[in-house]
Image (cartoon, rainbow, N blue to C red; front, side):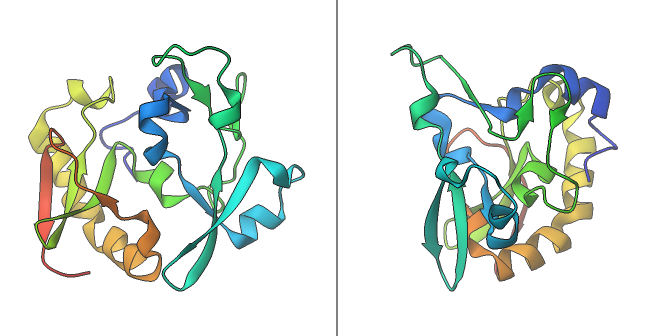
Length: 166
């Protein structure tokens, strides 16, 4: 979805979006019941109830080896050599659109940009905004069906697009 601004080769080398510090566990993507059922180690996930759909959160809290707040725990789907082991069909939308996030802000919704992606920060903001605008309808439709992907707005995340309803 973001191929216009992020090359797969750059993302494959970086993989920043596939590892989480304790303070960024809110970013851990949720997976669907269907994807969960395919997993051999179901203990790596916890079921959550979000709105009217069932989904699962990847448990990473036990993967930290130190108390260092900067330590990162990799996603369970990240293979150090191959990258993400999920098929494009099974990959959560959160992963497909990162570093863009759909967030609730001031009673409405925004597509905002995570300021932590090293690669996208080198792309002119107007190009990123155009890509966000091009995926807005897809993200809105998905969020309407799967409201659990909507995050609370975080100060410092540049707003790319705004809308009042899903």
